[in-house]
Amino acid sequence: MRNNLYFLILAIIFYSCGDNPKTNLEIRKEIDSLKIESVLYEFEVDSLNRIIDTLSIEKNKINDIGIIVFKEKTTYANHGHLKSINYYRDNENLLYQKYESSDLGILSTSEFWEENNEITNGISNSYENNKINKTIEISYNRLYNDNGKRVKTLITSKYEDQNEVGNITERNYNDSGNLISDIFIQNGDTINEIDYAYSKNVLKNKTILDYKEGTLINFIYDDEGFIKGEEVFKEESDSLLKIKEAHYETNRKGEIIRKVETELPSKEKKYIEYRNGKNKADKNVVQ
Image (cartoon, rainbow, N blue to C red; front, side, top):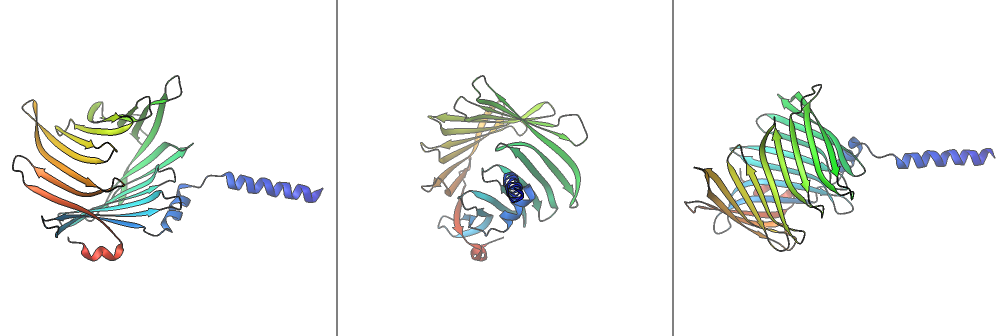
C-alpha cells in the first residue's frame, strides 16, 4: 500500500512539473543555445549588381518545428548601426525585444507574457546611458462579437505607477479574422493608421497614413499575397504628391530578392539586393 502511495505521489509530481509552462528566461536560454541558421544581407548595388554598400544584415534561428524564434537585424547608416534583437515563442508571438545603437548603447527593451497562446501584457523600458530611465506597462484587451470572433484588440501603455494612459494601438479585424486596420493614438491624437485590403482572404494592399509626417505609403501585393510594389506620397497643398515608387522581385516563397527604388520627379534609381549567406560571408560587408 505504501509503495502504491509513493508511486502515486511521484506521478502527481511529474505531471505537475510537465504541466508548468516555461518562464520567459528559460525560453530565451533555449533559443540562445541554438545556432544561426540563416543570414540575409541587404546590399545597395549598381546597375551591374556590384556591391556599393551594406544596408543591413539579418540573422535568424529556427526551432525544430521550422519556426523562426530569433531574429537579429543590424541596419547600417552614417558610419554607425542600429541593432534590433527579437525572441519569439513557438506560436510566433513576440517574447522579448531589444534595440541598441553603436552611438548610444541600449535604447529600449520589451518583454511580453501570454496565456492561451495570446499576449496578455508586457513591460517596455527606455534607456539613457545604458541605464533604465522610464518603464512603460503594456496591456492587451481583446473584444469579441456574439459569435465569439475577435473584432478588436486594444493595446494600451502607461508609465509605471501612473494612471494616465500614454499610447493606444487599436487593431480591428473582419469576419474572416484578418487584420483590417491598425490605429496608433498618442495623447488622444491619431498619429498614424495602417489599413489592410484583401481579396479572397489574400492581402492585396497595405496603406500607411502618417498624419504627423503628412505621408502615405501604399504597398501592393500580387495574387499570392507577395509584395510587388510600393508608392510613397507626400502631402502638399491639400493634395498628395508621389515622391517615390519601388518595384519588388520575390522568390517562390515570397521572400524579397531585389528592390528597385525610383525617386520622383528626378527618376533617380537605387538598386537593392537581398542575398542569403552564412556568417563567413561577413567579409562582404561594406560600411
